Image (cartoon, rainbow, N blue to C red; front, side, top):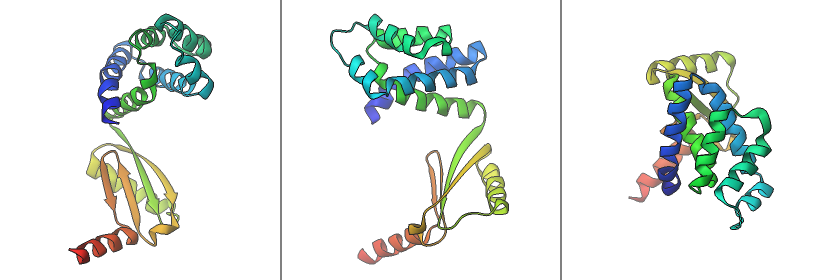
Length: 178
C-alpha cells in the first residue's frame, strides 16, 4: 500500500496543481473519478494488462471509453500515466487528489459509526464540535453497527476516536493481559 501511495503521490500532486491553475477542482475531481471507475472495470483491467498494448494505445482505450465526459487536460494526464505505465495507480491517485482537494477547500469527511442511529440534533452537535476541533467544514457520514454495543467510533482522516463499549472492553482486556 505504501508503495502505491509513493508512486501515485507525484501524479496526484501534478493533477491537483493543474486543476487549481485551471480553476476547475470539481471538474477534475469528477473526471478523475470517472477515469478511475473505467480503469477499475474488470474487462478494461484485463485489456490494459495486455503486454501487447503500447502506452499510447492504453491511453486511447481509456479516453475513448470515457468519451466526451472528460476535459482535454485530463486526457493529457491519462496519456502521461499510460506513457509511464501508471494507469493501474488511478484509484490511489484519485484518493490522494481528493485529500488535497479537501485540504484546499478546508473540508473533511467524517465517518461516524454508532451502535444506535443518531438523532438529527446529535449529528448537528457532533458536527459542530468536530468543526471546532478540526477547524474545517465537516461532512458527516453516519452508519449503525450493533456490534459496538454502545457509543461511537469517529474517523476523520487519520484521526480515530473510539468511544465504543466494544473498544473500551478491548482496552480493558489488553491491560489485564499485561
